[in-house]
Image (cartoon, rainbow, N blue to C red):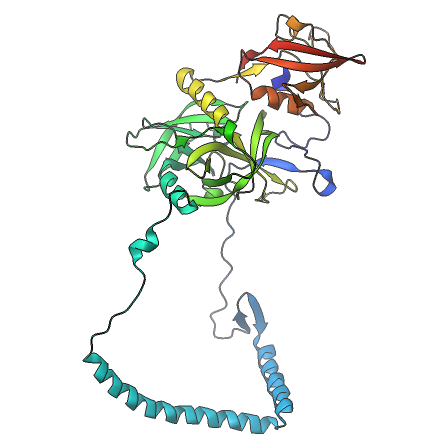
Length: 439
């Protein structure tokens, strides 16, 4: 088991949970947002037998008996204020109604005569020009949405659904791996387009390690998205999320980039993904998974993949903490899948101690015939040993084993990385070349 295959240890409820240490009971939960939750049915209609004891006021239901008694109480209270008895107040009300009827009769004659005069005149209604109202600056939320929506799709697998986006005119679509996880030959994967068309899709390949998948559809008239550069994103940049939350297609939400390089662990059904994520407060909900996160110029900078929740209830929802796979990583993985049908990820060739509480990531002990440092692997070549604690990679501090894996996954096989390692009270600096694994 190498660093990319580490399974959750103590304190994990399921593999898609990440402890961020800042919520109620000191726990944040991260979960994928692929399957759409069921929208509750509408409330039952009131009885139609002619004896409805309820009066509907907004969403508050008041018994009719209480309603009439409250009217009586109100009338008595107003009478006391005016110094009149209730009977006098009611009588005055009847008089007002009668007077209104008389005035209405007189007014009707006047209005009729006036209408005859108006009918002989030319009347011009001044209003706004609809064409002007429809125009929006291209960098506005409406402008960006109009440019990108036709390239965003919904992805349906069985009872679950997610989102995706077109990356080539030839019909390649990117989505999350967890959106299609569990699909077999008996399951139809259907992709729905903005123009209302729905077609069957085939899986080109997938990467559980990066939670990405590529689908292929038979349409040659598609408009691909424009890809941005996630390495140039900064905190505070405006962003727009587009997808199908809860099955509601073509939903657009907006926000900002809240943080960079968030280590997020997500996944399910035995597959764990490690994401060096962009964090956003744009509303993301179940069903948004696989949809694009775009910048103010309409360029895709991330793939929406996970949300943080305050618990693992059955209906997790948006609390302003969404996470997206940076598009630079997603594009590399998609290109590999299209070219070869599979993707690779970088490894050090060590097994990490999942019980180690940090700070840092400790290389595990040897266990029988299972060495903690892979023979002839990258780590063995620089004499890393069981018990070494890696506390820094490329200048970035490492607090947990999960964070080390996330940081490494942001690299590419063949990259050289510099590690700071603690060993027996000494601090060492080593440089190694990352190897590769398929997944």
